[in-house]
Length: 336
Image (cartoon, rainbow, N blue to C red; front, side, top):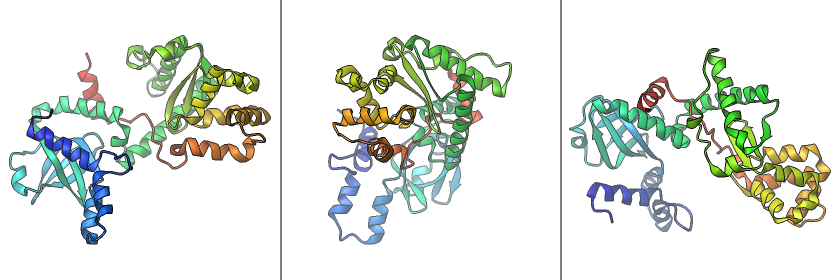
C-alpha cells in the first residue's frame, strides 16, 4: 500500500503516462482515442505527455517562470515549468540536485509528479547514481543524439578490435573460459588508449551467471553497433547446421528456436551459419518450420525481420553508454 502522498502522485502519474495497457498504448493515448472531439491543440498537448524524462538534474538557473535543469543521465538541459507556477521553484537554488520526471509541452517541459530536492553537497553521490542509471538504462542516456553517435562510433572501433584480437566477431569457447576471454578483450581495448593499462577486474564484468559459466560451449559475439552478446550452448545450433537430422532431438530444436525467435538477439549468428552452407540452411529451417522447399536465399531475411524487428527498424541501441569524465570519475570514487 502507498501511504506517502508524493509517492502516490508518482505512481499515479507513471500509470497514466507510461504503463502499457493490455490493448497496447497508455492511459493518456486511450483517453485521446476515446475523445475524438478534443481540439487539436489539446490533443497534441496530451500526446506530448508521452515524452517522459526521468532523471537526476542539477539546477543551472532560472528563466522567468521556468527553471533550467541539466540532466546528468543524458547530459541535456530542460527548460522546465510547473503547473503551480514559479512559486514551485522558490526553494531551488543554483547547483542543487533534483530527482524527478518532466514531460514535454510544446518546446518546453513541465514537472510531472514531485521533484525531490537535495543540497549541492550531494552532487558526487548523485553523479554516481546517474552513471549507474545510464549504464542500466541506455535508452535514457541516448535521448542525447550526440551520445548515441559517440556510442556507435565506439562500438565500431571495439568491433574491429574484437576481430583483430580473435580473428572473427563470433567465437565459441567453453563456458568456463568466457570471463577470461572478455577480460582479455577489454584489456586489449584499454591498451589502445594507454599501452601500460592493466587488465580490468573480472568481478566487475558481470559474468557470474551460472548458466553462462556452466554451459558446455558459449558463443561470444560482438554485435556490430551494439556490443557483446553471449549464446550458451551455441554449439548445438552449429551441430544442427552440420547435421540437420539432429533437429529431431528436443535439445537441438529448442536451441535453434530460441536463437531465431528471441527478438533481443542479433540475426547475425544465423546469417553466418547460413553463409557457411546455404543448402544446409534450407534443410535446417525447412525442418524447424515444417515447410518443405524453404529457401534461405529468398526467405531468410524475411524470417529474421519477422522475429527480430528491432534489428531492422533502427530501434536497437548500443548496450554500452560512453560516460563523460565527470560521471566516470564519480562512479570510480563511489566504488569500495
